[in-house]
Length: 401
Ligand code: SF4
Image (cartoon, rainbow, N blue to C red):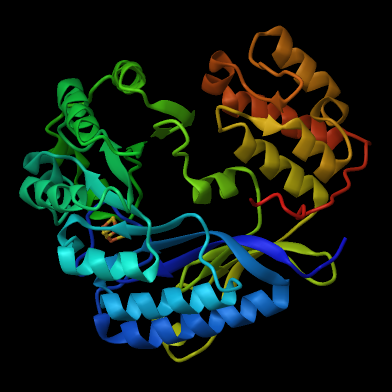
């Protein structure tokens, strides 16, 4: 297998937020003084990682954060131009930028689109002021509606994805469904409907009881109702929390779920790549704007993935998506079928009606999706006790298209 010419999904982390939301534990800082230096070093990091890991082009670009909209639009266009040149003179089919509603304006959109952005992921979270405020989100219904109105004018040139959070403090089931209905009324191409995860060390974690007012909706009931509503409106649930109109799956997120190579630039960006010696590793750019802004490229959380580790992650990620794991791709990577590697556990879960595989894919049934954690524990136990050696051929050439 040749080393050069690998295609990777590119993530660029812009670690700045004017103000921190009360539930957020993503890495970001509010001191905007480092923006210029960080962008410059992202550019250097692109060169460095591409050369070390033989990356020659990109399957998708996702600019996330933080708040990428904080970067002056001409500087963002400059960064995209660098990505275009490094990727062989073209930008990939999907170039997404995560946006806060307050960053959406005609001027910004025109510059982003001419720079190559063709998909906006808008952090709506809720349409209701009460819950935005309860969650410490610096946004408002007015800002969200104004952003959506503006974005509507560009829909022939932009795909739109909306992020909503299920279960903000104080929300009833009706409030959550009302948010979903309002989101659908804007006909986004894609919708991510995430459950709020309370992270320790965030203000909301410490103050949940007061802010929620003791209201806790029945998540399962809301979930079922929400999924029905989305399905009736033409949205397919293609991953646990992600829904889309036909053909509008996120190319970038799919790369993670399908364990394709990915390259993360900027403080806290995570990569999974294979080096010249064949070693596959996952590592994070040190989340520190100070050292990064000084031009240092430091990495932490470095994990070397053995073939067994890779197999476990492959199952963990691939079984999250409704289409499951492609049998063809699995065989090309592991030179065996999933059943060869998991003979006992896969038979057990098939008998219980939790696997719904056919000739094309190895996947969970709806019942299996709900029991995914138990299925994975069982699969991992079998991998750990198995004497069948796991071999790996990764990345596959052309698999990122
Ligand atoms: S805007 Fe996004 S990244 Fe920034 S603090 Fe809020 S949730 Fe976190």
